[in-house]
Length: 318
Image: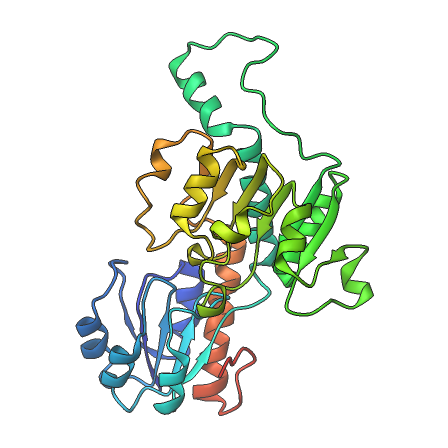
């Protein structure tokens, strides 16, 4: 029986499944393992099931035992794994696409609504029991019939568009390439980022992270947004330059910001916490039981296909 290291605690339904297929070393304490812990615990393992907060950088990958042939990432992204080094070590990497599309799209809409309708400020007033209704109390921005820009029109971006159409929103998007007409569903393609931003009364960030998209929203690009735009990021923290975004909020270029992801999370830029026109979540994009179980099953299936059935996993990324 092949042996697998699981670097964080799995949901019970997933654990019952995987323990029938492999010998396991399972980090049930659910605390982040250090690099040395991962190296020692995986010394005679055939594969690793890991999570987005475990960073498999070049140095760690190079120190892993040669017995490791596959790393199954419990996430749709795989920016926490150095793919070039994995290739050199002949370690196969998989992810869990598709199954978290709807859950993450819901959070994108939640961020837009929570930010635009000043939900954080409202919660403070409600808790303090010191509010009184008036015609101009906590006036927010309404999404209905507005223009929504989607940065990254993959599965999640398209699911965001589907929900937003229920608000009567006009959908604009920027992508590496234009979608086929049947996937566009009437959305308006912008080849240049600045052209998308200029139309985005509301902006949903749903593109991948990584080097190419780091600081994509910065001083130069943010200026193209309409004054008083609402921005939400449920993708990756590095896409936003924090300093430049904070400046845009302070001068009113951005009316409100919704964030589920952060640079260096779980750390958050302290300046964000001083502002009230923010709606913040602790990376909950895929956090429904249905989705998390589905992600686990996908990761387990990838391990099973490769280690037990000697076939190419469905979700191989390298």
